[in-house]
Image 1 (cartoon, rainbow, N blue to C red):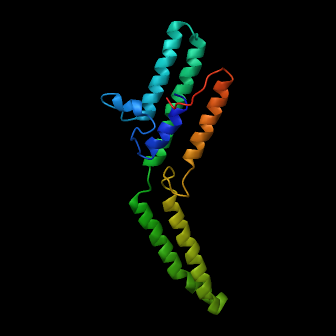
Image 2: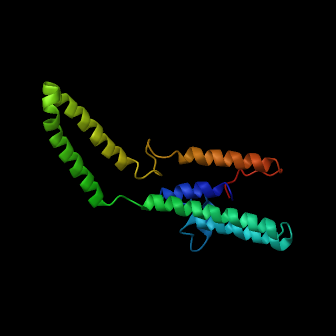
Image 3: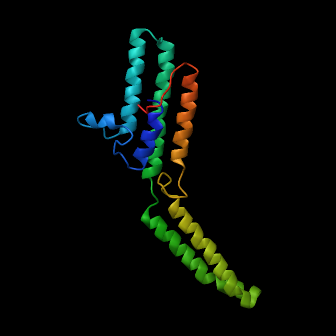
Length: 177
């Protein structure tokens, strides 16, 4: 279940909750709407079962509880990043500032650079507009675009690391659940 959490979070952030990675969740009626929270709950229930059966003591339960809470804090932080957009009025204001700057730039450069004013203005326009375009494209970092975070690679790394740790204890997690 530990390796299922980052994959579920990745799919949740991409709004791709189609249960492809977790077909057993389709049989739950109603299916969970927030799969990462559901997986964290499953982990917590399993840990409580370990405590009741005496496999772990109270101190270990507190440590694991802290880690499971951290999973949900990470999920909440990622959701805040995904849902916090620049307001349209801020974007419009930035575009107006860039336009005003680029319209007045030649007047400030003409005495110093003469005929080089036009190429310098074009170069500055390229960079200023480029910064605005980049800011717009990185506003959604969890998608599948080339500039987005490599969540697939991160999930593979987490799966590999968890499997390596569990291999030391004689367990394997080929199945994501």
